[in-house]
Structure formats: C-alpha cells, structure tokens
Image (cartoon, rainbow, N blue to C red; front, side, top):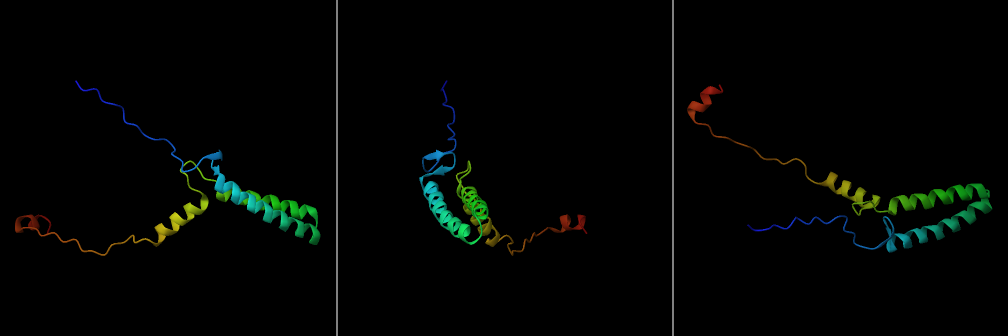
Length: 112
C-alpha cells in the first residue's frame, strides 16, 4: 500500500515582517508621518485654542490612522477592504440572457 502525505495548508502567509501584529515597516512609516503632522497641528491648535483641544485632536488623529492602516489576519487594511467593496458594487450583477427550453408535445401537455 502507498503511504500518503497529509495535505499541507499554509496559515497566515504574510507579505512582510511585522513589528506588531498587523503593523510592518510601511505601516510604521505612515504612522510616523501622521504623528509628525499631528504634532504640527497640535502646536497650532494649542496656540489658537488651548492645549486640551490639541491633545484630544492629536490622540484622535493618531488613533484613526492606526485603525485605518493596521492589517488584519487576512492581510488587508480598511482602505483595501473599502476598495474591494467599491469594486464589487461597480461590477455587473445582472446578466441579460434568455433561457429557452424546447419541450416535446407529450411533455408540454403535462404542464398546460
């Protein structure tokens, strides 16, 4: 008898190394850029309003960027998922064709 090998199924094959689950080098760079921009916006808001508004806006902006950029276990982030949904909504879902069946006379009498 021939001995069969078990089927190998890969689990979570990622396209890059992650520092933290879902955050690799590209995501870390994007979060760093967002952090720098947020600090600049925070300084301007602290001058115009007060420091509490600047802190709240800063935390909100950085948290939003992290949530949008972080990849899940299917290796997709929120932006990619939205683009998949938009492409699906644009795709054709109704096909215009006519289905015709030819019946012989005996079979047609049963349904009339």
